Image 1: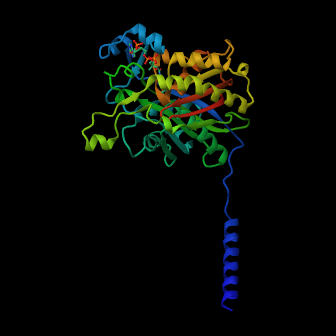
Image 2: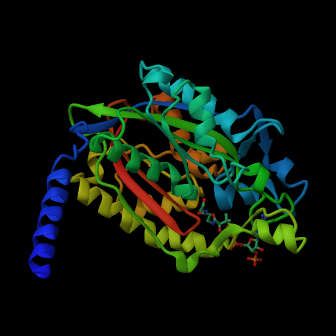
Image 3: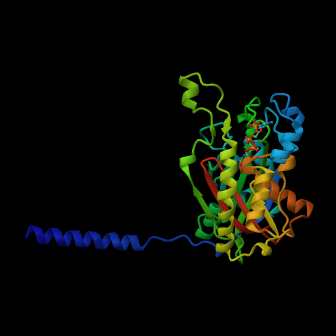
Length: 352
Ligand code: UT7
């Protein structure tokens, strides 16, 4: 008797659970998404190789030959990650023909926002008038921008946002030891932003992404904040095992880029631009060779004047190529970001 009552009670409970669950409305997104616009900000101050060589034993010639960097920009002391992001974001929003209130998602890719919490993204959303947009920072180092593009594309198609602002921004000068010969010359500051929104046709292809935490220590902050607090560790600037990262980038990232093309149904000769993370000009050259990229495909080389700006490097390079006419609006561009983690992400997009 007891058993029968219990079974029918549990049946009716599970029926009512199923009935309630059946009422749940699923979000409906756009059929496709694309990058609508790009904005950029280069800080005013140009830092030459000669200036860098005042604190390390190096030369302008060595830095140019080994990295392709001629100069980089450094933000002013009182210029924050969010300040730089705001300038790039305002340009991207205006160029998309939108206002801040149209933006309902804000993703800021950065590893140099100097607050553990709150995020730069929440403040940025407020500053551009996007409140109450969903806002969060992404920690995926030099691959952060491509992670943001992938998430924004999914948000627009999944129906959790209509217009997403994706920013890659870094103030690496705050986290660089100017006396460290292996990193002092490589990093720079800047911000790049895009708006991703609905589209009638595919504008962002499949993302190939991944991580390899076994190599967690090849690019990392020298110390944790706990070490700084409890063990009097010095300022936790970035350190890098340059050669290990170089080899990984050259040998592991070209196959990822090739897979991205295959998954997107695109041949190298279909590309109107190749915009890899601006890590080192020699890495870019090696990737072009391994990909069998025809000479006719324009390749981003913003590193010469911007240095390596981690999450900001791809949107900055994209902005420069569209601005100087070396890449056409509406053309297909292969993007690939890779860096600390180790992590990487790559996709083919239609240029705004
Ligand atoms: O953005 C995130 C991902 N980051 C990257 O992808 C960066 C990857 N790594 C690199 O781009 C390169 O490893 C660097 C540009 C950082 C360094 O270039 P490298 O060709 O790998 O230099 P190396 O460390 O193998 O050093 C070569 C030589 C050494 O001298 P010997 O042993 O051959 O006599 C170094 O002592 O160059 C020397 N060296 C320098 N010389 C002048 C190392 N750093 C310097 C320097 N100036 N700053």
